[in-house]
Amino acid sequence: MGPVTDDEIIRKRLLIDGDGAGDDRRINLLVKSFIKWCNSGSQEEEYSQYQRMLSTLSQCEFSMGKTLLVYNMNLREMANYEKIYKETECSIAGARKKIAECKKQILQAKRIRKNHQEYDALAKVIHRHPDRRETLKKLEALGKELEHLSHIKASVEYTLELRRKQFYVLLSILHELKQTLDNDEKLSKVEAAQETSMKTDPKP
Figure 1 (tube, rainbow, N blue to C red):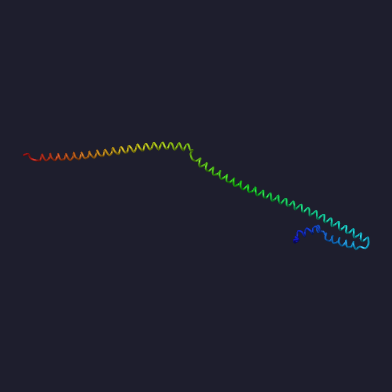
Figure 2: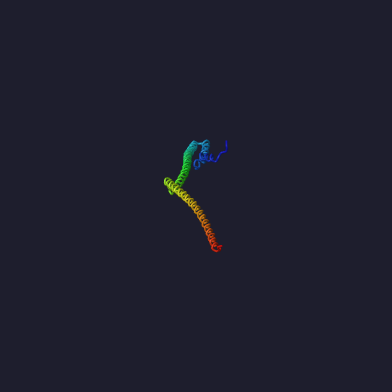
């Protein structure tokens, strides 16, 4: 056998002593009465000891019954507490599960809210920009305008090139005209000198 625990000692004590109202003393008294009854000499004393033993035994049985009732009640209370404990554990587990689910829902709600905010911001940016059709129309108009300007540029460049050639021809003509004038001036001077020389020379 293993060592007797304090709980077992208390349980045996309660079974013997009941609620602590002196059952040990009653049992001792019953043993003494039994010994006296065995050693009694007269019939009256024997009957008296017998009645006393019955009374003491009745009190012990009453205390034992009360103790058993208390013990059974304690067992029921312990079973009830165990049931409450298990229900509490289940409730705690359920509450933890609900808390975990709520945390997931909160995270999902935050994610959805963030997506909504990003969507609203993107929608505002898109709203500030023109429509795709309008942009294509503007691009088409700019392309036509650019083509028109390219034609104008080509025309201007052609005109400038023509004017450059005409100016070059004009410069050439002016240069030839200047040479002609210079030559005519030189010829005039030579002729004038010859005339002067002929006038000054005596006839033979």
